[in-house]
Amino acid sequence: MDYLVLGSNGFAQMGDSAFYKKLKVEMRVLLDYFHSSFPIPQKFKTIVYYSVKTFHHDFGDYQEIVLWYDREYVDSLEDSEIESETQVFEVFWSWFRVIESANLESDQLTGQIKEAYFKSVDVSKGEHLSVSIAS
Image 1 (tube, helix red, strand yellow):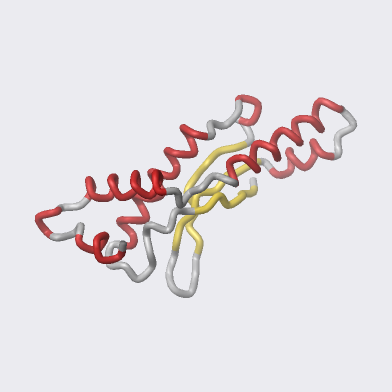
Image 2 (tube, rainbow, N blue to C red; image 1 turned 135 degrees about the vertical axis):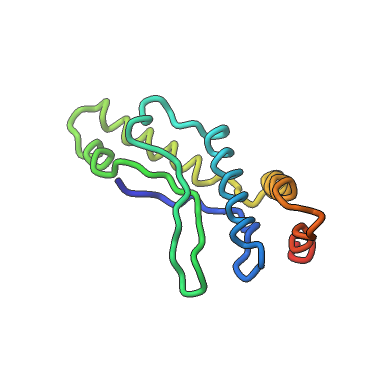
């Protein structure tokens, strides 16, 4: 299996005291978004899935939504002499180009992430203030 990066929204910012809590909410909302807006086509359900992947960086770990896929199988379709298999190869990459172009920083998605975050914090402890300052 290999993966293709789909990205993140940027709501959770490294250095923010609530970074990991915001990141968890952001990833959950984005994962739900991909599942509902770009469901995996039936013909790819056995070779593809969405997930959250952690990447390591000098300034700290961060996460992005990725699409895991059976690269060996997909690559074999390209070289196939069977026309229907080469068509599946083209359909896979066409579908990926559509999901890859999703605007993960849209106002609508950012609003959904903020709303989910505010529902997850304890306002009585002032946990919500870091969003107001950072926004």
